Amino acid sequence: MIPVSVVIVTKNEEQNIGDALESIRDFEDIVVVDSFSEDRTTEICRKYTSRIFQHEWQGYAKQKQMAVDYAEKPWVLILDADERVTPELKSEIMEKIKSSGFGGFYIPRKNFFLGKWIRYSGWWPDYTLRLFKKNLSFVEQREVHEKVIVKGPVDYLKNSLEHYTYRTISDYIKKMENYSTLSAKEMLSKTPQPSSLLLTLKIIASPIFTFLKMFFLKQGFRDGMHGFILAVLYSFYAFLKYAKAWEINRFTVHGSRFTAI
Image (cartoon, rainbow, N blue to C red; front, side, top):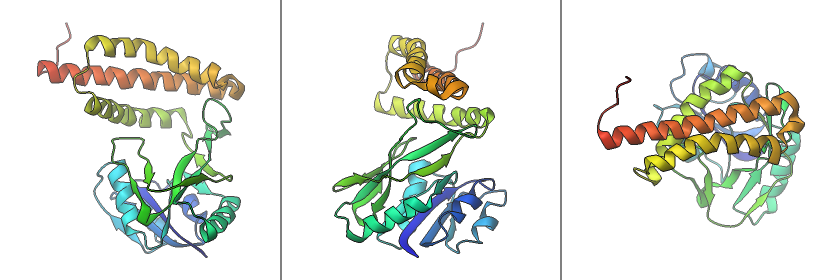
């Protein structure tokens, strides 16, 4: 058994959670923090662990920190329901935690879009800090794109997590609606009431820049049609993020929603 706590937060993940848990069944401690799923998520989880805790959703960062707090082992691995730990990664984790002087490790992720591993488009190697010592680390509190902060030196692992994100275009669109709202709110929390001119320029320029960056600078064209679709979707995400920030900012400044003519 691997002496690491794996923590997962869930909400209606019956399509993903079984494969995620199967990939970590040989870890000594598995913690699931569930936000009162209405499908078979918790039923599936009970086949792999008894350490299931239910809490109302408080945001990505707070929910993951709560899961980390439940961990019983000195080393913690954060896993999302749509991720899988490969045998090669398990072996490397075992080796590193035995003799490492580091407080945490970045892990590369193989991101799959519509069933294909995306090797370009800025999606590989997509390092994310997921393995860390509990007593030296915490989850940074932010609206979206939360990350782990480690007090001490960190290193990089060679073997990757497999991330089966966005199995369909509809999948992406559903998540984009939520993430773009959270990103807009976070942006405005850091820069309250930015000028309408600045936001207007961002609305126009950011989608164009995002597409050019992903498809050309990050060589998304080498991912074929998958790369083109991704670049278009991310451009629309950039548009929505700044458009929503503009909308929220206008509402805050004027005190009421404006009426269409």
